[in-house]
Amino acid sequence: MAKAKKKIHYAWWTLVALCIIVGIGKGALNNSAGLFIPGATSDLGISIGNLTIYFSIASIVTMIFLPIGGKILAKYDTRAVLITAMILQAGAFVAFGFSNSVWGWYIFSIPLAVGGVFTTVIAGPVLVNQWFKKKNGMALGLIGASQGLLGALAQPLVGRTIADSGWRTGYISLGLAAIIIVVPTILFLIRKSPQAVGVMPYGAEEETAVEQRDSSANSDADKGITLAVARKSGAFYALFLFFLMAVSIASFSIHIPSYIQSLPEHYDAIFAGNAMAGYMIGVLLGALALGYLVDKIGSRNTIYLAMVLAIVAVFGLLYGTHSEMMIILSTTLFGFTVSNAVGTLAPALTTSLFGSREYSQIYSTASLGLAIAGIVALPAYGYIFDITKSYTPALYALIVMLVLNIVFVTYAFVGKKKLVDGGHWN
Image (cartoon, rainbow, N blue to C red; front, top):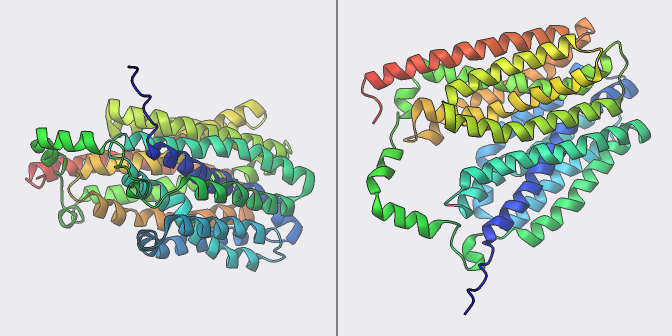
């Protein structure tokens, strides 16, 4: 008798849904925000620095709401929470399209951030952890890649819409499209838990067998340094500063469309959208390649390589402005490296330095650097342009921060050696 065809585990349908949710929430919505800045500031007479304060407000709201959001997702129906989150996040884009003063962005950045906490930060790790006991790293990598893929598809369309119909139509169209695509995806593919569809998480049976065969291997996996010890070490503060610099550098991506359109070559919104498509392709490729390199050559060497390539990208943005191809290649390389420093390299660095024993506590504490950078860096780049009428000083600042990150990582591993030699790794 022929063997029955094996049914696709529902975890993979959940992963498809997460790729769409995160890909649109982060890749299409959040990463296209910079495309609207030149048109909105020009039409309404708002300075870039003042407008981009809304990113700081969103960062503050995100920092405050993150612990609350985790409890909400655990307590209430997953589909209801995610649908509400997407309506808040995408609805804020629709509202931006009707705003006539900077206060519109300030006010609607609040629902933008609240919704984004679920769609871009919490949903992926929480649901992958719930549905996958095996291949969860690959699942998270695919979600990161989807952000790059959908962002690469969305950016040229948004740029073309802005060029043809104006920034207001761009905001409204993008927000409505996100709701129309994501809400049915959530309704049809997301379920509360594996138990709700009568299955165990993917790989749960195999994981149980492995645990029974080799419990000592699992105990080794839980070794590391405690938060109490880590917080007193130079390695922890170097990690914190790496987080701070990494997000500060990555935050410049929001200003890339404004930078391109400010150049003497007079590039338009359509070309800026195409360049940002290159950026998102870089995000996609980097999410896959850097994760692979971390496994092969370690987090330290991967970070060194990424920071050097990012410096090359910044020099390309500084001195390759006469060539459209050079700009696109530079933005692609920028996306490949710095945008993955937070999502891929920072978690791997944390594990390398402090192990798995109290990983979540150490990572979440060091992540305060992410929030601080988001609050400060985004408007800072805008004010640099407002004051100097150029993004050149900001680009040189990026090079300095990239070099500092190499120094911080080197110092962090020196600090780790001291902790290990002192008997704190157990």
